[in-house]
Length: 205
Ligand SMILES: [Zn+2]
Image 1: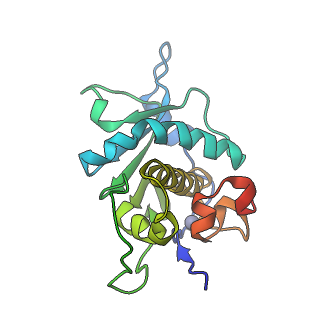
Image 2: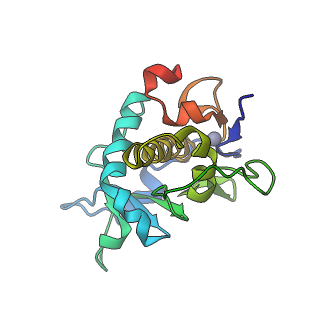
Image 3: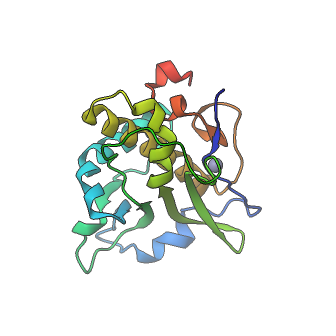
């Protein structure tokens, strides 16, 4: 049986208001325009070991899903931000719990099977906010059976790929300002384990 999990439940009625002009350009100067950025926050410092791989995987997964990124987009580890960092546009990604797949044995989820989303965004007054949340603990459990026989390096790569794909999925909710999903591809409401970790060609996208 293929368990499917809801990656996110978007929900928005307001159309059109994006990332563009009005929301973000207030920060932009005339001569030295701040660049857009994705800033990633690791709730558990141990997860930061995966940063280089994740910084590489996110743009790769976006490109493979044919998702255009803004010119000059910077990816940053929040722990390295200075006190006066300034951005033209900003999406914050909060990775909750340990994301660096620790050594683990198979342990079926005790509380209701995959009892919540792996990733989500917030809606305020009908507008999808530029904050992405990924529940790494839940994701780790979701991938557990799949990665059990893998080496530590392979497990971490599977986790990185899954997080990057969830980030792209949520990025699209934010940038498109829509809760809509598609039947196939990265914008599906529910992604299987294989769709989260397998190479694109093998996952059918
Ligand atoms: Zn979604």
